[in-house]
Image (tube, rainbow, N blue to C red; front, side, top):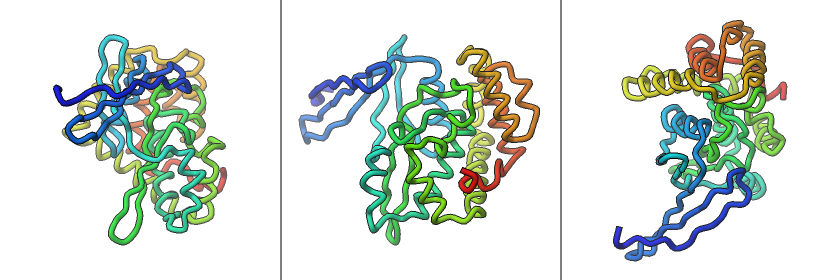
Length: 265
């Protein structure tokens, strides 16, 4: 630790809990990293755990009492990417549209809400023959809390409309279903994994014993998801943990959730 020092601390006034952003510099080579100091709450901690276990990206964080420390997630802020990078002649529209469909599906299955363009970043990954993208959530305080299914689907936020329109222009409905099924299959593989599977099950069991959201949100969300899947199993859920358990179970039961959602949007 002797070669590290805190260069500055910024107050993020736009956050609902006004977190601190701390820049730590290595004085040997002047390289630096950012860390965020936030107020810990159940939804945010559950959200970070689920991101680490279910998404293709890993994330490091620490919790001590009511304090949460998160590492910085690298990428171009979603709103900046939409304003600047969508106009790039080298944009790989097909790859970006595919990644957004998979991100949309992943958020719905694991009940991560409020993923408008200010709450995710886009990681641009150059390859030897084309550019790939990874969309990563950066705010997890709306994990399994809201009462409407649309809140858990990034496609329904108007801030994301330019990416939605790009997808409608470049992807056939059959491709959307293929990518939706691909993401649900990847989640199913993680649930069956001997490494991540037990951790996910233990986490969901803890959530089933916790009161994460108001009863009215639970009742509203289970109604929405029951209509979406045309399946009454959601109606028996008594809390958000049980809704999440059912949602994860449905990746095996329903490999394809809904046809042509880009077109219907």
